Length: 182
Image 1 (cartoon, rainbow, N blue to C red):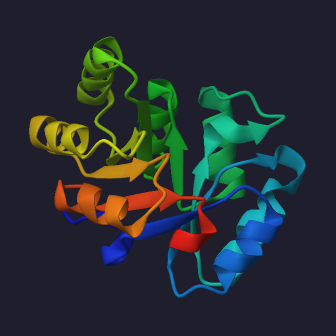
Image 2: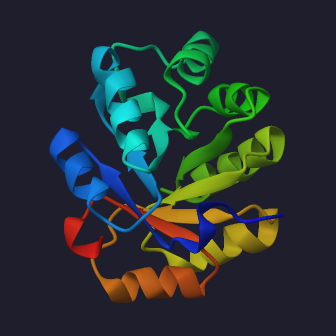
């Protein structure tokens, strides 16, 4: 399988338009859009794309839009991000039906979450898994070896050393809103 992100190991994540403007100045291709309002969504995506960025939209964090299959249809047909990130399996399945890069976000809080996450991944077969918190390299390695789906680490990553550690354990990239790591 060709790995997404063209070797880009740090994927900056924007919480707001100011973050997005800073990302547009960076020499990166991919970015994550975390929080936005449905009324601003199309213009923000087009703005980032016109700046040469590929936008991975976190569908669960679009204010004013219920995250269901109809919302994913709307996002894929009308908003046209370059990828969808979601914690919801049905959203990932729908994004894949639209031939959209589909990234399943998993929170690894305990062994129950791990087991449920593995079952979900095996069912929906996303293009990538975003594993949170990303500061647990052993879990990145375990998930990568078990499922053979590219893993992105995100959440609570604060240092270049942590980035290097999760990349060394099999993550293909790190998502971060920490501007010092961009």
